[in-house]
Image: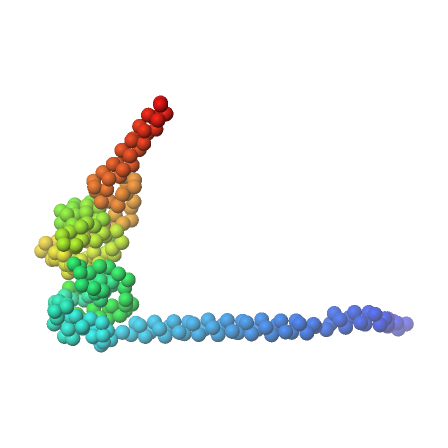
Length: 275
């Protein structure tokens, strides 16, 4: 006997057609999501290509680029041929290490004439600085960059601290906090100075600092001093609040103002209380 085919009522047919048919809003939502994903992917790819392009342009700087940068920003004082002028010294023999130090710390270009060039925000990128330094080195060779071992901070910290006290503390303070010199000059603090710039300062003698050549301080001596200074940067003062590490003047002033001031205040309070 043949199975009788069950007929669906009009209501069931209507419900089935509703379930089988997609809403027009679902199609619009799918299109919108697709556009968003496509746009985000395109934006990301464009940004990556732009960053790669910028990196390639910057990293492609040559000695010739350094010459152009030097002539545009430094030649007014130091001369087109590094011969110097009334406003700036000659750069013969200073080498790329000195150029990197002066420009990378913001001391150059000089903001204004004064007792010494202060640090200020750096005006060039690292690649531009290296390009200018390479140009000066090609024109008038001088001190160059040290080995990575010299700057690794793994020298003899104790010996470096002793060498620093003997050779540097009279100006930079025994805690490397800096100090005042004569005629408005000063020795800067070394709390944030990089290992490369510590070495550059010892070798090139910027501002009022003497030059410590390898006969005065060997490369190993310099490595130990750098290691001691990096140790100071990385470790807090063991004696508590350092008061700027400026020595007995700041400490005595603190005691005078807060210590004796507190004693006077307590004495006045006791006298007023008894009366």
